[in-house]
Image (cartoon, rainbow, N blue to C red; front, top):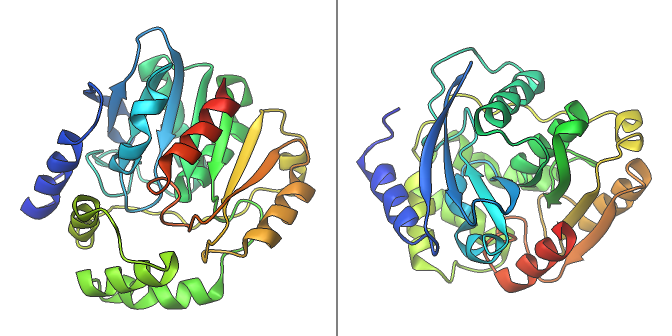
Length: 279
């Protein structure tokens, strides 16, 4: 899929910053081909990373070096979203299609038993996949998950609306500054985010919350890591809802993190929490 020179160049530049050796592969599926970047020891515990909407697998640049010390890391571009995955097969109509896509990725890379970590939209996919195929995953980590346990903030939607209806770099930056409370301290990452503004995506699905009965019966070990300053939802209310709806899960708050910065700022703290839980 052609995304335009700016996005392609920015994606290549982001991948060139990948701090560990990486192999990039395209995995066929009934929906199209999935771009996956693989790092870490060949016989390490397998860990699949699913990004938030609009950020691609490149969002894990601050985490992959630490995670790839002991894990075989698979950073995935989500089908239907921007990135190097190519959605030229069956349509994506609902979460059942995304879990079928994940089945194809797991089959193609022989990932049975792998851990899963997802952020935002990727966390929603991660949770739904664990409910769909609990026998195929080891542990799951949900980073500031949206529409998994509680609804998203109306104020967040209203703030995002101008950037969604009439995308521009200025509107996108303004929205991120509002949510994160600060300008990006990483010019290279900001340049990548700028390039994503007009990059095409084929299908981002409406996120429907999983049923409470399914969450309560889930036996997959789960860490829900919420951003203390998230404006995508109310962190304390979301934590309380997660405890009610998924009592077996471990719930924690990442101090000073916002929804959009949780993977990229203060990576040492996040990476420590991830490696501790996945060990």
